[in-house]
Image 1 (cartoon, rainbow, N blue to C red):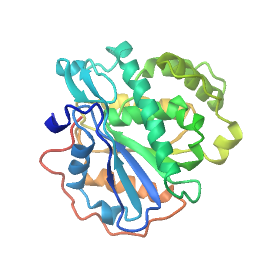
Image 2 (image 1 turned 30 degrees about the horizontal axis):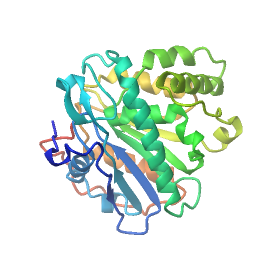
Image 3 (image 1 turned 90 degrees about the vertical axis):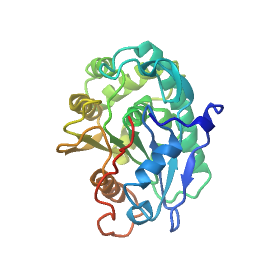
Image 4 (image 1 turned 45 degrees about the horizontal axis):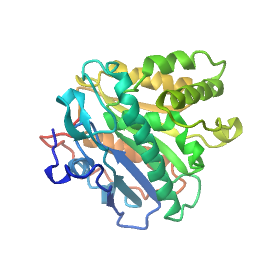
Amino acid sequence: MSSPPALQSEIRPPPLIVESPEINKNTLILLHGTSSYGTAFAKELQNLVHFDVLLPYTKLIFPSGSLRKTTVFGGKLTHAWFDIADFADRTKGEQQQKEGLKESVEYLGQLVRDVVDNKSCDGKFDVFVGGLSQGCAMSMILLLSGELDRLGLSQKLGGFVGFSGWLPFARQIGEVAALGKDWMEKRILVQTWLRSELGLPPAPPPNRTESLEKDVRIFLAHGTDDGKVKLEWGENMKRILEAVGYKVEWKLYEGLGHAVVPDELNDMADFIRQNSTVQDQAIEEILVTEPTTSPPNI
């Protein structure tokens, strides 16, 4: 587990920001997994690829989850987006997850708002959000909660990305979605239920016309041999996201366990270029082709 002794006194260290070598035209916010934190996650990914070559016009932001007691680590303080009780069964301890999910939704909503407010965002596609493992799970809850819609930020979103992720409250969200007659009704029902469950204030329902004109796309990557976040959990998340109307690009990586490898980041970069109004210049294959001996943590 990545442990940041110098940060233990900070409830949430400031995000690490990596400016692009060219003019910032996109922003990518990447969330770490359970046993990491922003700066460590950034270093791990930068050991895999050269982001200045891969996405030369994209600013990277690596925030950290709040310092909280994490049940799966025996109650130790870690920077986590929400509590996890059991790696083998992500449905355990769901009640204890709510506080962290609510706090993280509010924090990430404000972070995206700050990104939009503090720079000139030309066009509809600008901010991408995603993460690894728990960071992916947190990103999908942020999306389904409608918090970015509530803050008037949906038109600035280019898409969401995720690696080795799962969806918290997947069973309940799937059951709620099944009550809707079409994708929009399903999305509204899920948003309403999720906000109520997490204790978030009510938000206006998404607008069908606006959603049809500009709806975020999602890129999800998963290893076929992931023993920590089972492939079936990722597939279930994909089905639920599609049921509420999102277009998901789903990629499997044969033989890959619970890790991020350059191929995934290369595919993510392609997704960002395809879904941004400002196209990054064409690039060659990423310079590093093998993962490090210590892949990013869960």
